[in-house]
Length: 178
Image (tube, rainbow, N blue to C red; front, top):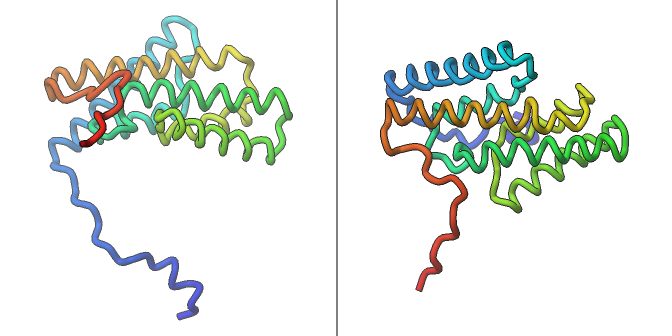
């Protein structure tokens, strides 16, 4: 094999374990309910509340709810921060590929710096550059849509997994070790 192509074989680590069937079914049900709720709310109010990246958020909120990137702080702040950065770069520099690259890189860096990493929010600058919305995009669909899926996740998990979600809202720093 060509040495450079060996890189693509990976480390040959085993696949992660499959989630139990019940957990898979609940993840699918929760995601369907969250997006269905936000979509119905959008239809009822006439407000744009759906954002493609919210579908990816549902994968984490309902499939991996204990993960740090699934917590409300990360979902909501990650989405809002990334949309703000995308809009700021779009308005400052125009719809150029290099500006999009800088917007995405900045959004990723800021999510890490603020401890609000939420991978699906990384697509928001791309969505902003493709759609070229006005500043109201930060509120609808970004903020209101993210809050909507988080509220459904909180209610859903209270019913099916009491006391397990969320782990935190705003969070606090861990106590220093002695």
